[in-house]
Image (cartoon, rainbow, N blue to C red; front, top):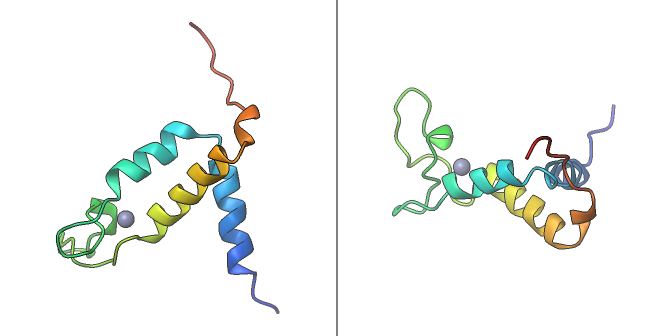
Length: 86
Ligand SMILES: [Zn+2]
């Protein structure tokens, strides 16, 4: 059994995420650098301790959100998410 190409998986996920602006914008807002150089988001804290000094910044979530933003900026914006109502 061959391992999947991690880079291809990462790019594929970022591409899938890119039309969901609110989602990756939220991720970029919450996964920020703490004073110690770690991710400050609660999701990236040490499990069971709540310490933010656990996952080095940028964490994987921030990285994929940035990649989604880059993909969106690169012109995938035509594929807009339909918004119903006014
Ligand atoms: Zn994070």
